[in-house]
Image 1 (cartoon, rainbow, N blue to C red):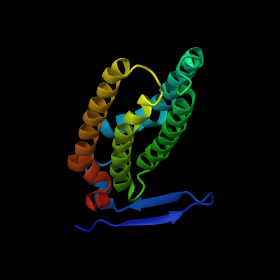
Image 2: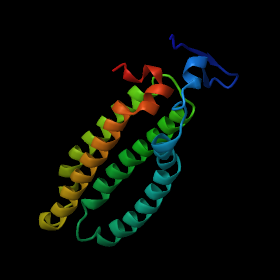
Image 3: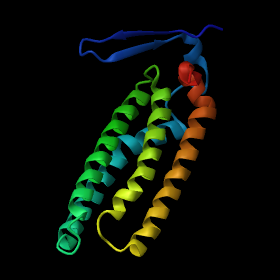
Length: 173
């Protein structure tokens, strides 16, 4: 069985992938199930949560900025980096939805980057000047949550039969 993908660009410059009939006949082919859940979360839910979360965060930052002036630059750094990551995941979700070649390797890379950011973000939070005892539970919760999310999704993209059926180049890593 040969599985070939041919890529062309449409008039707008978007990449169009034509999958061989062998791929499309597989009952697991397509963006369905957990793969669709991943796309919907990253394309629609995460951006809304990001906006709501940081609107509320900035209200809080401005309230406590007089007592802890370090919270403004730390909040700005967190907002910019997290906003960039949300934007990047929107782009990746679109590429998954469009069954773009090489997107699974990109997903795995960005899952690692998000995990690294969640770890590197910890010292940044303590630079706000707030009491470390108050910040520690949230920092621990953030690392544990990130590790669990990473383990679940990285494993999914490595072992999923649907991912392998839909993205034949997914195992190239």
